[in-house]
Length: 135
Length: 460
Picture 1: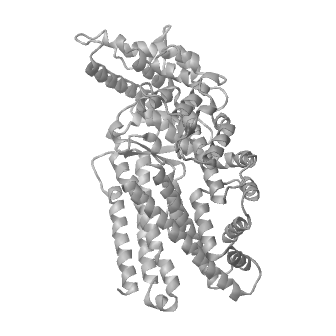
Picture 2: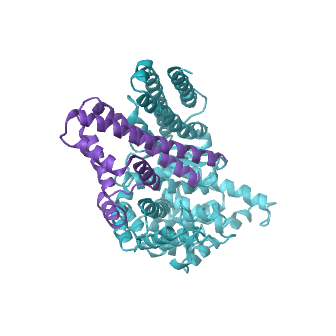
Picture 3: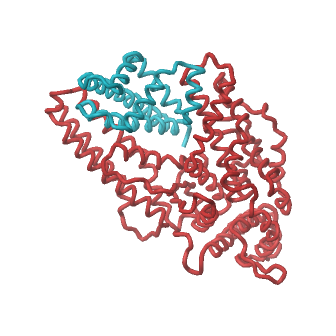
């Protein structure tokens, strides 16, 4: 397998992760409370959104103990730009806060759309890698 | 087309596709398989059936009322069909190759021997390996851990999906080398990838790496640049870790196989790093460092059979860090910083492996004592499973057998050829024929020392 193949694998892995988060958010969008595991994942993602670039981001990576792949980071950066970092931050905070249920539902839908876009872009990238592999 | 009907079509197409992918796992053939391979087939079958049920359920949920109520949600949910299809594209690459790697087309004795050695290490007591074939001749391009990661992620979205069997790993070898012994020593590198994941070494390396990276003035780096830079370093470190793991597991035979695969005695080992691997010259240098400078080094024993491979290993030590570069000439700051961080982290893999294998290698002394005897046996065409040394009967270890045989193959084939009538030293066909016979003798010896009479100790 080639570098393209490995990159494709990482994009597919990202698409599956995004799909998994969407599946966890769906009950929340229909009024259920945020499950503890989803709560942890969303807090982690909110932290990622709060880091700017350079020093603070690197410090965060050092303390988190895991370094995300380029494929993951670049896709999140692209989609965050499309949705607006401020909008996303608000959606995350509303969902994780004690706000009104209706607002939480709305935020959950917004995040489902966000992760749907992440999945979609990751699938596109995977398909490009696949085509490159096939020549 | 009606969107609901379109989804039904796509769902049934995916259903049919998965059904055909898992078919080789269900077919009863006259071939026999090792138990890890059978376990892998069973897992794939169950995962396939669970995914097919999931696809059918999803298709039922994506009905006209959902489309009317929320077309955006309908579209987002239907996108899952693509994610699952691509996931099964990737799994597809492993199923038939695993079915092809039945026991007649696999180096079962070698894998069994290396597994036996691995299982003596704390934390690896139940490690086992299913073998897959590949058309790629380069062992180092396989993604050994990928199947497990992919299966794990699929199970997070497919209800009723089975968990990937704990401590089952997949190792791949070129189909043409299915019965070889010497080159397949490279499988020990694949076992290293399993260890890297099992021991969560990526996490271990991440903290110190972020600290080292933080010292570099990289004000122009975006977050994706940072991820790319650190990702390069981690991938290179993992490869060095796997090389050194293989040396600790299999001994210098791994370094010999590495040189043989890439014909490095006849072509200058590359000093250029790629996105996935460090330069060959660097990899050889690090292997030589371990062989020469560990607490109980192999190097003095390797001089029992000095050869042009050991000469090459020695030469690599003269290479300084500054001689290495990234292969893409246009590589910018990201690659430069990655290389600098990598060299600062280069002792970490060795330290991590010391935690697994311990400081001393218990295989060095027996090899040193028994190597000559194994070579003598081979020079007479005798299977060296049981040695008589100073009137005592000794059963050599798997590592001694493998390394002594590789040394014989590299350095002492003439002693065998000279005993044979009508065989000249310069007859390449004869040499190749008898080299293959040496591999068969050593495969038999490995089988003898890892099996208990007729029953395999390791469930293979």
